[in-house]
Amino acid sequence: LSTLYFFAQAVALAVRVDSTQPHGHEYITNTLNLNWSFGMCLNSNLNALQRHAWAYLAPAYLLFLFALSLFLSRFYRFNFIFCRSGCIRMLWQIILLSFSSLATTSFRLLKCTKLTTLTTQQVSSFSIETSFRFAEDPSFECFKGDHLVWATIAIVIVVTFCVPMPIILPAIRKYPRLLPFYDVYTADYKHEKQWWCAVDLIRRLLLAAVYTAEDDIQRQHLAMSLICAFLLAAHTLAWPFKAQKANIIEAVFLTLLTCLTLLSSPHHNWYQSVAIECLFFVPVTIF
Image (cartoon, rainbow, N blue to C red; front, side):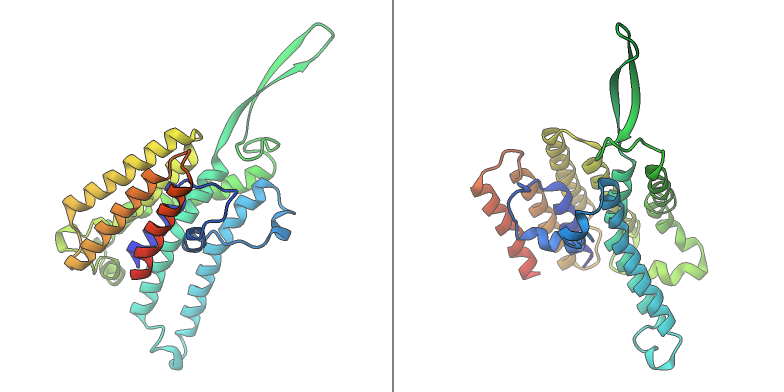
């Protein structure tokens, strides 16, 4: 599942498609990237800042379900479903599902652009004013008013979750009480390659950072292609999973991700769009 999660989440960030035309793979990638649509009626009543902040709702909903499962685990009849290892596995799946969405949403909310305006003071005098504005909607000044509220939330999420999480995971094994959690998310890796679980989160963080930081489509396409090729090469050299089948599946999906990223050039044609759909749905269906 971790391989499928990353593949769908990376396609949503790295593969550029024509937004004016519907694409079948977007339904799956948006679902696994927690980009849930709540209808045009609701979106039409929200400004750009609120629409981006609304993306925090899906991870919060998953955490609510996890808290509900913990509550139900206190009752005897639900112990066989929500046992200790089951809750830990559920939490790890929530982290894998939410990490890319939280990072992308937080980086978007913190992205500001420098705006220079020319104002007239008197008949023959002008003044130049420079301010930082929210990139998605210049009507919001950065770190003031409504943007300050959501920017504060975004900073807290980045500082307390997105950045430290890849660092915390390998360090958990030093604490005996946290070993059950450590054993769950490192169970599929070789003993000497258990640190690869941190790489699984770092690559999500890297793709989210490039996706939000770079505005130029061509440079973003080049950066995404290089990152995907690097991830494929790193996996081939590390070969981190215990099961050879898992390593092969991961390598196949990373190869397809690299091909999809290369095909989704800024000016791709109809044939490339068809190839993207086929390359996405055939392995996902087989998986």
